[in-house]
Image (cartoon, rainbow, N blue to C red; front, side):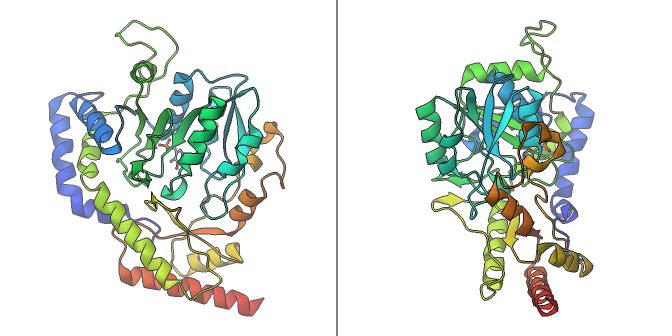
Length: 372
Ligand SMILES: *Cc1c(COP(=O)(O)O)cnc(C)c1O
């Protein structure tokens, strides 16, 4: 069995360090928004390259509070992608705004910047690009459109901590960047967690208030906020893991290069492409193949933990049915949904395992061809 992700192997390496800092928190008596959260916020601001970060309960809260902080709500439209995790568009609906779906670039899986301008209306307030699978979006084009049309940009960086576009980390191009520390993410806690990156001090203060019941001063509440405080145990664990993130992302990139080589001779497998001048951090290694559903089943039966991210495009999800989209509206998104498959990818994956994954996938493809 080769899993898509094996968190236990990472724990085997850093467990002693993690247990030490967790014990320190337990003994300290400070459990929510304490010194570890403060330190994590400044360490991450330095790592990502922004003025401020605000630690939150989840990536979903980061997205939703980003929209709240920019006063985006009822009657407003946000242009985004339908090829992402539902939290992206859920956050837009939570604040009462309307997601407007833009089709994707078939090679990068990300929002097709060339198609954004056609979707802009007087109600458009923001663009929400998603750096899917750890691959940066075309930020020059997106920021140029945003500037010309006076739109906000909220980057969904939940899968892309450490990813760079022209030497600059994602989450620092737009007005606000949103990160997740869900355990399976490249920098994952041992519970939920999230983060906002921001350069404006005013926006930072607004988000700090929103995360704690809408007040900057205790028991003084200026607006309806939420409880989205990060706890000290998660912050302490994340601070340990932050020391390894570059090493881990490097290992992911090296595994991606190895997969690319192993699949080089196989015309049925389309390996992921990277935009020029980007540093992709391979949250997922996702290929395109024919007869995807059949192959997926065969891989599972052979003990290969392959996954489909994502099997239903968001414009076809019941939750967004009221928006009135139909099949055919986003042809490239729909086509990708049918042929993508993500293969085992985590820093501790071994070369032997990668060879097994590759040879199994290739033989499954041959078998399914012979049967056809
Ligand atoms: C994981 C993820 C989220 C949500 O993050 P949570 O911490 O699970 O709330 C949002 N967007 C994308 C693209 C994600 O992968």
